[in-house]
Amino acid sequence: MKKSVRILRRERKKRQKLEEYNQKQLERVISDEVPVYKNIEQNLEYVKKILGDSSDLVVREFRIDTLNIKVAVVYLDELINKDITQNYLIRPLMKLKESEALPGEPWETIVNEVQAGETKELEQMKKAVEGLLSGDTILLVDDLEKALLVGTKGWAGKNVGEPRAESVVRGPTESLNETLSSSLGLIRHRLRDPSLRVKYHTIGKRTKTTVAVLYIEEISEEDIVKEVEKRIREIEIDGILETGYIEELIQDQIWTPFPLMQNTERPDSVVAHLLEGKVAILVDGTPHALIAPAVFSQFYNSPEDYYERYLISTFLRFIRLLSLFIALLLPALYIAFVSFHPEMIPFQLALAMAAGRATVPFSSIIEALIMEFSVEILREASIRLPGPIGPTIGIVGALVIGDAAVSAGLVSPAFVIVVALTTISSYANPNYNAAISVRLIRFPLMILASMFGLIGVMCGLMLLLLHLVQLRSFGVSYMSPFSPLNLQGLKDSLVRIPWPWMKKRPVIFRTHNQTRLHEVRKENES
Image 1 (cartoon, rainbow, N blue to C red):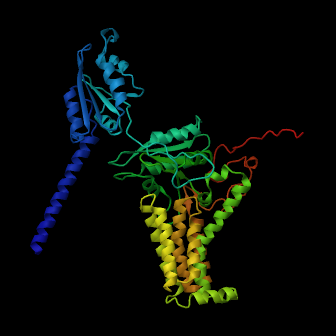
Image 2: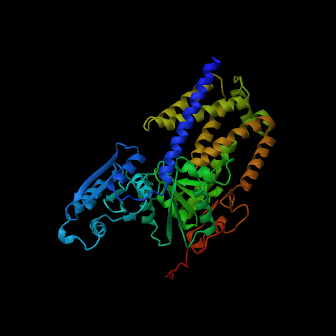
Image 3: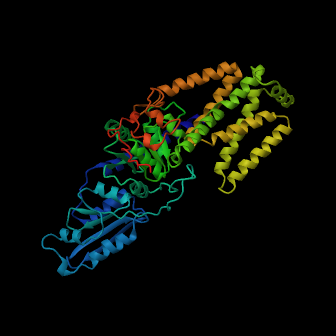
């Protein structure tokens, strides 16, 4: 038996070494500065070798009779716009007339006849393969050590829809798209500023995912922009499939439940953050954008706050702040009062709660954990179920389980109300990531309350506050403008003052151009 195990291990090691060797050989071939060969067949053989002669690799060879030269059009099916390839690349070359040929080398004539909007000369096969994988078409010409990269990107993508996690009553209803070019178009449509800069980075050893860094040059702090781009360039990973990869790889601190970068799927929200001097990161293949740097208060602000009047927006922000405290503290306070401080509860309410708990066989912490975990499971199940069924199952399941648990004497009626208020309050947060953080922190506070009562709750809050104060997001204090205190930043934190009073951009992001609103000309009252 031991001998057979040793043989299996030896064989496994051999296979691993062989795979590593083949991978190194492939990497060597791709990374070598292989020029475009003069022989068109050598170029096609190289492309087929790199791509493994894949079934979706299309090679169209034909001869241009006017120039008496052989050419090949190479592309990956389903990644290109076939109309551009056929009508603006292949057809003009096949119908080239003798009178249209330019004197000199045939290359000038070919480039002149290609009617596509984006073309680029290549002299290395590595660039040609990268272009193919990005959805472009390669034109190879026999007897010439050049290749022409033609922009023909046009893979299928979904139409612009509504944001799923950031719905508002008043405001634009467009959402970013999985296609990077479409998302950039939505942003450019709202921000027609020549100072808007878009910097592309290719991340992922295998996926070659395009990552775009956006900022307004005249507003954003140069050091922050450089730091963001530096951290992105230093990423070495096989693949990037969503912004969550980027977020976790470049954030300042890993061991924190709080998001140090905001993600949004609203183009108007991206533009608003860019106008405050922040940096946006878009990843091809996902409709979510990252905003950096981020502070704690912005996770409880909604884009709708700036579309409604300031009194309404301020009221809504206080509602969200109240819901934050309820979602974070209400179960822990219930456990602390019931277990350690019943004298702090009004007498009539204490009698009602005692009567409700008379048949409950568990302690308050066990009761709380049973109900909280049940609600979390229902919440997760309602998200994973098909759209029309999910919300119904979540509501019905909560009602049925709550009523059955009370009837069976497993939990008290008072705590069912506590759990219901806590769950509803957690949904009031406009940012999904921040809401999950609160749900996670609630459990340690409940355990501290069961062990030390209100003293445990206060110690937990103090540790939480100390953790928040020491957090940084690309050099910006996470608790700004409260710590360090900045009076100008308070104008748009817990409250939102009227627009005429918010003439300056937030100082905490160290923007170059501080002026956001110039003097408003007031008409004389009649």
